Image (cartoon, rainbow, N blue to C red):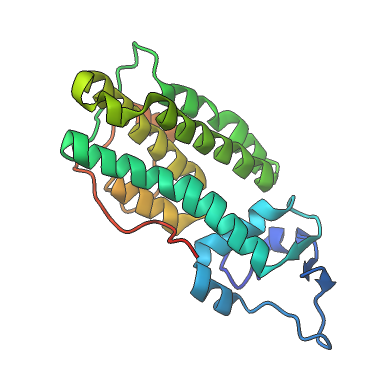
Length: 231
């Protein structure tokens, strides 16, 4: 499956453990092999890549089931990441006229600086091939950002605290740009889509956290379809 997805990890593929399907070992007699083309037609390549890396520690055995893939897709990709990006894009468009931030004020505390600080642990996990740990850490940050929006309620700030709202939304955009860079090795198409939505117009690599904090494109927010439509 990993080779069929075109993962640029040729030596790592062979270090990966065996997969079972719905609790049973893949075998010719059972005919329970997984067809990556069929799965990706329904869920997309990035979603399957994410599932394989998130479902089990790299190098160990694992079990594949369409039900587990659908559960992670709807919960973690559609609800957690996809909904977060959609909320931020829509609020920037609605409350700021699509205006995007430039260089953040490094002299004052802001949330995305703390987000950037998580990079050390995430990159260390990736270097040690602990891909599941890296994704767990990334999704912990995504969860924090969703909770931050619920706590701050930017829709309530719109009339009474416009400047505070502006900085909060800019802070969320910087944070999402950092996340787009983190997920690029796992979900390159999703990373590129996120960057486009968030005003980063660059054709090559995702931005590093340092590049985000040094300032990015001031293009307008780009509204688009959900990253992961619910299944």
